[in-house]
Length: 282
Ligand SMILES: C[S@@+](CC[C@H](N)C(=O)[O-])C[C@H]1O[C@@H](n2cnc3c(N)ncnc32)[C@H](O)[C@@H]1O
Ligand SMILES: *[C@@H]1O[C@H](CO)[C@@H](O)[C@H](O)[C@H]1NC(C)=O
Image 1: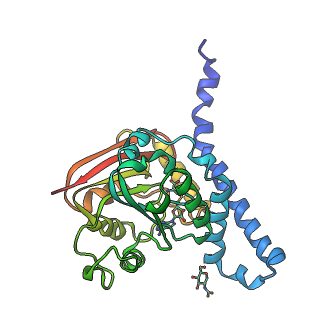
Image 2 (image 1 turned 30 degrees about the horizontal axis):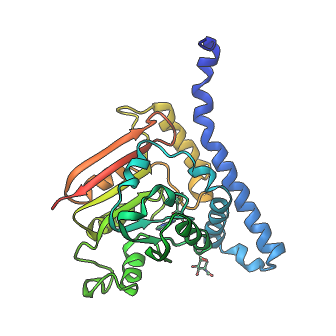
Image 3 (image 1 turned 135 degrees about the vertical axis):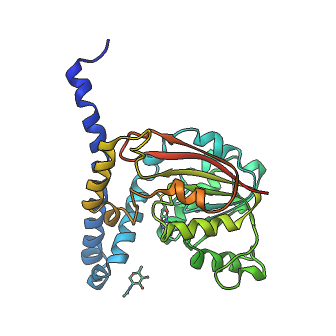
């Protein structure tokens, strides 16, 4: 039985307000992080370092809610990560909640570039549970070249081209960017750097939320709400996550692709995703 018309009319509303739950959660963990620094660690000086508090708070939130927020993933993500093969870079794996969706069999090694040290314990635990054992390497670094390249160099993956912050040749068979590009610094440049690290013919797996495509298949109301949430401190309280990034375009511009297959998932939402795979030109 269809629901009454007035309920159908109300339905778009809650949908636009969904992100406020997440924002509220971010604010809660921000406050708790400050209280913990003051009364638990008794290190009030920490509170004055906003960068510290912001990222500590995000790690706190992800530790508590990351698993719940990974139960349902948008679109065909399972099929995409299920066929990952070879040498893999996972950018910002968090606590590795998605690792059980990979198939360790064809994977030679995974390097996870995770700058939040607080999440590494959970990450390594989930890597073991998912059957990766020695094949998983957690790097304490971000996906931006100035952080990633020295870390790869140190781990022995990059030869002489890893000197400084440039890598000239492709290294990885596949690179996974799952819910991370919304928060990396200088996304255009960072994504170009990742493109460079991909071998010719290599594959990039993408699952990222992006600016609402309101001009085409998206929604104007959702696009407006993205401004509203941004103004309410979305990025500040959620570890630097930006809602209005045109990550799809940055990926397109990063270099030449043989295949560029990205589909919008729930394009009318305030947090619409693009999910798919890109193959670098041979
Ligand atoms: C929303 S979580 C997603 C984690 C995981 N990819 C997943 O989908 O379950 C974003 C992760 O990116 C990490 N992160 C933040 N800044 C980053 C950067 N510059 N480079 C790489 N990862 C970063 C955060 O610490 C966090 O673990
Ligand atoms: C603030 O915290 C960040 C992140 O933990 C750290 O890198 C930075 O050095 C700190 N700044 C100061 C002034 O202590």
